[in-house]
Image 1 (spheres, one colour):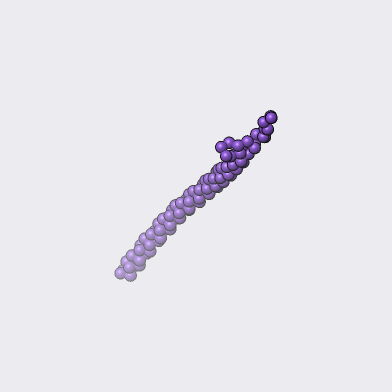
Image 2: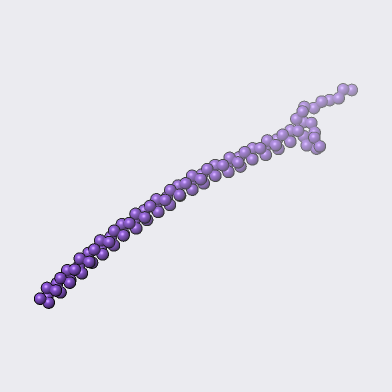
Length: 98
């Protein structure tokens, strides 16, 4: 009696059919590829957000530096005005004494 052959995917390998093994491997590969795709997309999104945040921080630092310079100029102008007023007060006192 000739031995009946079964299709390759239905053959058994220590209790697992080749079909089930192939399905398991394919499913695992699909899951791994999906997880890796999500990871790399998230990583790219985070890098983009990080770069935007760095630019915003740089802009804030530049704005603060500019504000410090403006405030220093204002202080200098006010000090000059105080000196002028002091001179006028001294002049008025001297005029009053005469």
